[in-house]
Length: 391
Image 1 (cartoon, one colour):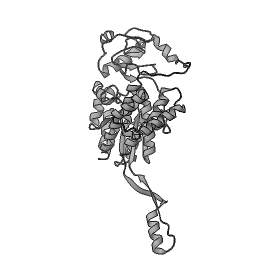
Image 2 (image 1 turned 45 degrees about the horizontal axis):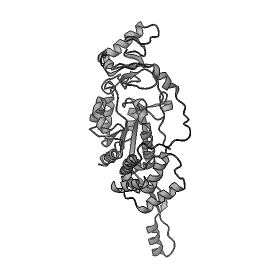
Image 3 (image 1 turned 180 degrees about the vertical axis):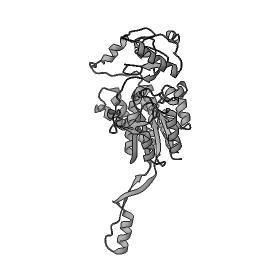
Image 4 (image 1 turned 30 degrees about the vertical axis):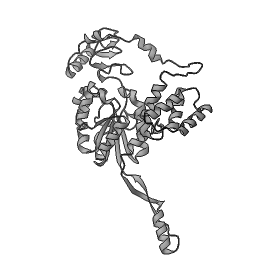
């Protein structure tokens, strides 16, 4: 199997040498990978891959050669979350049954019906198609199904159909200390560089020191500011909701950006940019920053990067009051247009595969508002985005 792996890598144009292959075998004999396939993957990748450009090809070959190989311990210990068991009571409909459930109408009609239900309903309701409750086909409630409605009392999105969310939710901050699984993101971000020597003279200028010493006949030390990346970056991260599925790649990107850019500012938002953003998700309801303050604080020479799946109800972009969690005074489209107008160099990174963007109308709307400067959150997409920002 290992010989096949070596030959397949060579056939895929991954420049693996015999010496590297023998080093991998020695590491296996020393039990460096233990009994886990994941450990063997990282060991073989570290031994055989010398250039980040070959990582994708390595992954393809590894998946093909070792397909279906799983080595587990003697026992599998796991705690099943309580929510998994509670999900058994949720409404589960077939596609045919879903197609027979009609929407109430547009944004105004849905909000009007919600106010009417609140005024008329006096108790809890389970199932059914009218009242605010659980496990039914009403446009208002939790753990049911409706093509477009208001989600109330449900921990997470299930069908990604809600046009507004009643509940107050808490989101986790991204961790800038997380270690990347690969160096690819950092390598891609390094295209966004413009070096300059700024700040205090703390670095030895060897050439000037040698020249000055030779001319003066005694040691003449010269110092200079450290050469740093002078690019200034302003990042906006979408958190919560459907972005929970992409939190790992978002954390890796945040960690890489925090390492690569000395001048980095960041804020969080949910789904679409509105009148406020925040720095700490634990304090997001108590300590927000007006978006106007952000736009007035950071000048137009900043490079702006949005990170989000742009997957939401179109009302969140087009309507005042369309935000899922609060009544926004201005439509999200107005704020995105302002950013695009102020910052010439701005892009949107989307963790959803580019081939799937046409399936979600809101993605196309956000992309158009930013002048089609939306790129997939992949190594190739990052590379294209960084080239766009450096234009």
